[in-house]
Amino acid sequence: MSVTLGELPNEGQARASVEDHENAVDDAPRLGLTLAPVGMHSSREGVVVTAIDPDGRAAGQGFKVGDVILDVGGKAVSTAADVRDALRDAHADGKRTVLMRIRSEEGTRFVAVPLGQA
Image (tube, helix red, strand yellow):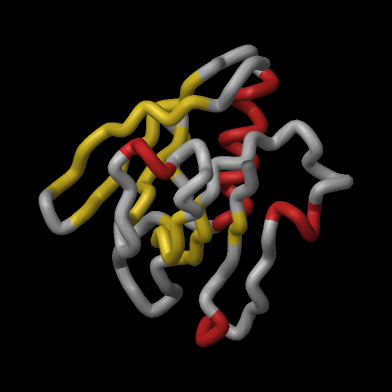
């Protein structure tokens, strides 16, 4: 399972994927989400889901393209790296699931996402 993390090209930064950084973060769980920052010109916080791998761990958890991940495991996120770090920390702490706070068109909700065995 893989998570592709990235930033929007119009933000002046290239997309980055977990696969590009595998040697540095071998222990980061892969959820199958492609992420980008909400935007530097926006007052909104979080990271936008831009794509979902139908075979990824997060696929069956109700994520939709356009959802905004506000925090992961109680840690506020504003970049794809923040999400990756929070997932890695939760996995290193032995957690098998991580709670994400998600904002969507329907409102804000919490989603428990499986990380696998620690």
